[in-house]
Length: 249
Image (cartoon, rainbow, N blue to C red; front, side, top):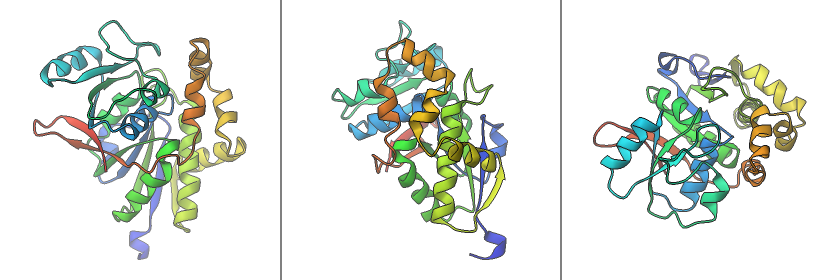
């Protein structure tokens, strides 16, 4: 790789404007819990996941896709129109093979919709981190954007996403020595090391995690913390109608 083609990584602690991702290979993180849910769904054999920004759009899309299910959360709990919630352990415990899923969450699915303009966009989490980064590198990416979905509709950073972004940066520095760190990459890396590279420590400091604990979603933390438990690469593309859709490859 020449100097002009040196690999750079940029971390966005909140979703950037869509145009900021043009020309980038992006990995979108929403550890609590959208992208971790995607890992659970595809591990169970789901066929496709449509990320959608709101439940009005999601309910309409479910009606347009025969046999599809609508999942997700508002305030971490499923609203009445949803068929299922947003817990990865819920989907890991049932047969989801062949499912077509419409997914709506407060942060992660919005960030994925916003990443549709990137050259490559993946749904990533700690469970499939190395597989996702390997895929981006194998495709010759020269600019990797790690996008944290954040909290409160993407208007504030989240501890868990920022920690996972730091884990991605640390992995990339091992995989490709000499990588150029830009934007929030150094900050995310420092945060990752400050927590001793231990997801449980970061999760313990997460305000969103506190909310999930109060709702008895404790099992989701262990599931989300299992680094590299999956080799699935979950890529964002378009269906024949031009709608954003995730599939595993």
